[in-house]
Image (cartoon, rainbow, N blue to C red; front, side):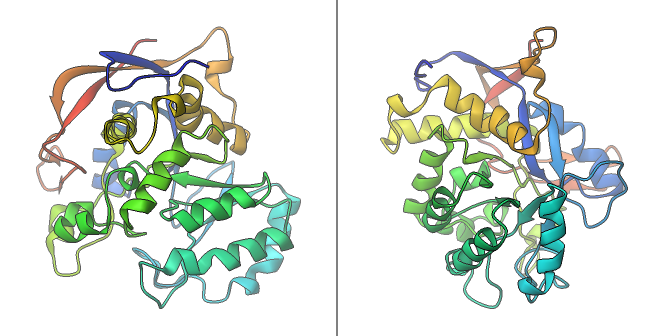
Length: 319
């Protein structure tokens, strides 16, 4: 598969993105966010909800208690749920794992969780597990060492920011918190390694501007409407910085990370494999700027996008 020099392209064509971890919220916030799925280049999303009615269940999310927004009633003892995991393995369901140890520093919580991931995988080797929004070198290496039933999602915002950025800008504050520059580089390299171990999950998490600005502001970055372009932009920036090489960025690796690997893992039909239907998106340099905010029709809800005010490639659907 051919290499791509993202630094020199006027445009790039890609299959539609599949976002395997996003939050759309409820009611008016959901009405605001849902149209942005297509604007971000996605034709499939895996939405995270505390409760839902559906004819099909693909996965079950596990939150350790207190590690992120609305997880105060989360799991305290993972082994207590081993019978559930046994049943999930038997029925071929996915365990979506928020991999952080509660009650310790947010900077080390993911690394400290790794033994738990390894134990789960060893105990249930056929259970499909996704380490959601991996944010550390330790997490990346742990997923690589596990068998083919363990994968990880990588967000757009973790490809852009570090702990310092999150401390200086509340709209870059997320959980898992962004880590050191070395962790960011490890994530960038994993996104293009072509191994199928890592695929895209935005973890786009909209919060009203008031919730973000209040003391102890809500954790979450709002990326939904620009998620594909944010990933490509982060990789372009990494190329310019020398963190990844042009040889590492291929059309196949980019398509795999953004679209194909996640669909294959979840056993979801890929429309791009059907000759009669190949939805495609095009990113073009037009000087577009991410808006300062987006508002509901009545103006009552205002959300600040991640990297608002920065230039980004424009996205259009070409088929």
